[in-house]
Image (cartoon, rainbow, N blue to C red; front, side, top):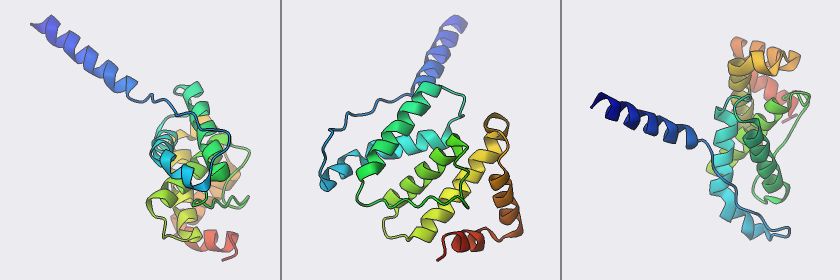
Length: 165
């Protein structure tokens, strides 16, 4: 009986581990603006994966996911991403991807929100990711500066001034 339970638990754990993997649909080369909505569910899954997964875990999946997100963002008519050198360290690819994923996820789920709200959410998510995986990502002077602004309670003001809003 103990062996049976051990095997059953092992199978369940393996399925949970495999649940992190999903495949992406193939997007046609040419799409109409109305076609992008069909992929929003896949984009949200991709964003969740990028935001919540260790950057060292399954690097090929991270790369595939980031590539899918970028390809979708190139023509998505309803997501207007703003990247500022004052908000994200472009030298740290993982942070840039998490920033874009967080912005995209928030923008899809809250289409009525403005650029400032999307930027606040994206920076907060990026800082959480940086804090969690700082040892793997490496130190970022900009992220450290943003963390200081966050600890002082001035992050929203800083983001607003960085975007010149």
